[in-house]
Figure 1 (cartoon, rainbow, N blue to C red):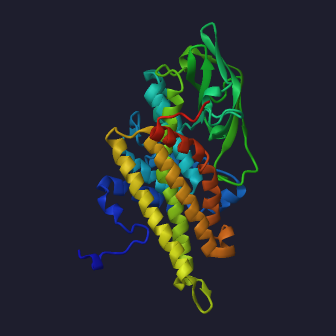
Figure 2 (cartoon, rainbow, N blue to C red):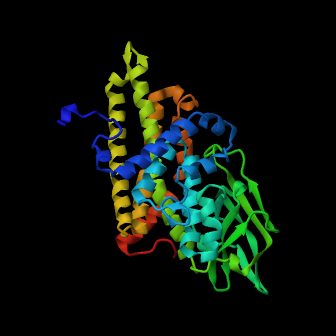
Figure 3 (tube, rainbow, N blue to C red):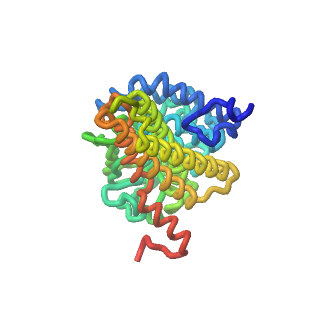
Length: 393
């Protein structure tokens, strides 16, 4: 087909979608349809009320996106790019839905899959893949965010049991989770523990009055003499390598996901610019508006190209944490700038829930600092560039 005859897609100027496999296209279309039919009709209300529809967990399990990048145990075993595209489409709906899937698959299921015993995998993973069981990831603490090695949560042995004491904060899915993957200091080093809901000494408190990620559950986890059997510990890892590897998995989904939020904002701004009249003509016909739209389209395409490249590296087993930091830092910053520029095109209309822009912008403010702040990713990249560690004196 000659270039002039091909359909024009303003969200894919370089036709990157043409290089996706049939499986990748099918995944993207399936998740896009799910978001269109199940998320978009209700998201304004969920965001305004500050609730996450828990019943959607099993629906996400049915379309196969929970732990979709893991093999076996009821997981789909799909490629990294398929997983990334699923995250992109979910976040085009709302960051809260991508966050739910990311926490479930990359932060809760992944450590069990990678570091758990066979018994732990058989017990938890099939039910988590179906959405019957919801998981969360307990690493961040009130005084230990960017420096997880300074965590105060402790696990001590008492006979054949473990006893955990400590507090985790800003935990996505915490209040609705059936099992928490909690990281704690032990005499041997940092270890992960599987803490089922209802365990004596384990309670959760949801965070309210949020102005970002409102359609998502954020909680405090409290462990007060929480007694667990010996086989609650993940046997396959010791030290910060465990939780940091999980964060790398989650950040990969984020660097794709935020492009869905950016695309949603760009599309809203583009359509608005063609219908909003000022000075007797559509504002899309003014040079300054076109400059904003052109810049957004270019950044969106460049960021998608980077995401796809990182996805292909991951599929070949070559993706490094530094490369993930490049994607997370750059793509989240650009997505937030696209949301802000889109808001200026919509003017006052851009601050209402009649359009998705301010909701995405508010969500992206959180995404900028969770799973590693922008500054942490800058220092990670800086250390790789210079060979000098700026994290400690």
